[in-house]
Image 1 (cartoon, rainbow, N blue to C red):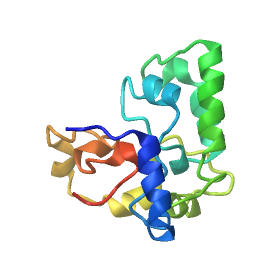
Image 2 (cartoon, rainbow, N blue to C red):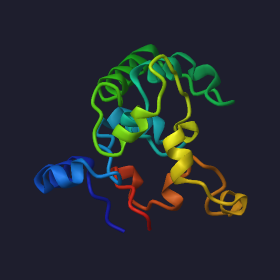
Image 3 (tube, one colour):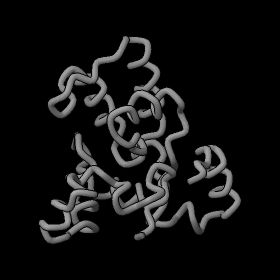
Length: 157
């Protein structure tokens, strides 16, 4: 399988015009190399547009207990990743599917899991057996069903 760089995907999206940018199947992909490398070392690097900036701040403040794992990083990496995530957060740059996600986040809410957003829950109302499949295992495994999720494309495969 050929991997297409995120900047090329973004260029195609921009060339496609508002139709794809407004789509509920697209979110701006992660374009920051450090974020892709550090976050993507353990899981797909989730697009910052799925959470508000205050959520990314809280997540970056809690890396020593990141959902039960120690994801601590040097301070300079934390600062750089935080800057990227908060500058591209859904309440700062709501594009594509992120618009729907942000509409369902309480004005003072600080969701820490994309999978707990009412928009996610509505779109992923599957029977429990789906989440127990060996190729899925967890709700945060977007790539199990959305083969191009890491590129910001969430069409139903």
